[in-house]
Length: 169
Length: 102
Image (cartoon, rainbow over the protein chains, first blue to last red):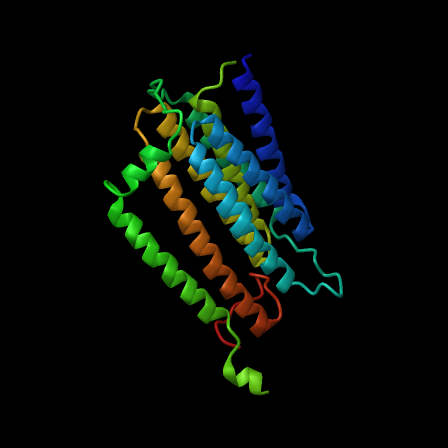
């Protein structure tokens, strides 16, 4: 076993175990913090796959942005003072069985398919190539996503703001 | 066993299944959002793994980047909606909210 394999198994175990905690623990704050560990593990997997810029983006956007948003959501929508932070679960057994079957099917497909793999030559840094491809081949999607982010920002602020009539009451 | 494309795909399949399990079992809307994030990350691992082993250049990584951006926008909008629902109904359990207005 090379170092690559050992590090891969380490990150895979971190990712899968913490993702399991995310979906099974009753305490929603615990699952938010486990999601942090999952995202870090996935970032390590990106590094192993030669996607260095993507790993940094993963940490900055997911851990720095989305997870903070989720924690805000958890904290603002639970009655912290009355310690009602546990969350209910429904249909545990059918969900476990059906997702187990789904996992089995996916696993079989992923393992038995004869993927054509080439030993691609990933450059030592992907930032130059990514920047070039973003403003040549994918420039339209890039600009559309910029507009989408602006619209999402304005929309989120407009949805979440307090109504005028509520403030008067 | 030498780590290849299949190992990454299996990790992503496990993450995807856990995300589905989280979405269908939890009541809290924020937990459902966390399940969606798990699923998006599983898709991202697939894209990057195929970009690495499939000789497709950097396109897979660019698409993974786009998915991360979309996930950020989705999380912002969805949490705004969740906060609004909480203001209106005082809970965020997805099995109890069956009206759009109070």
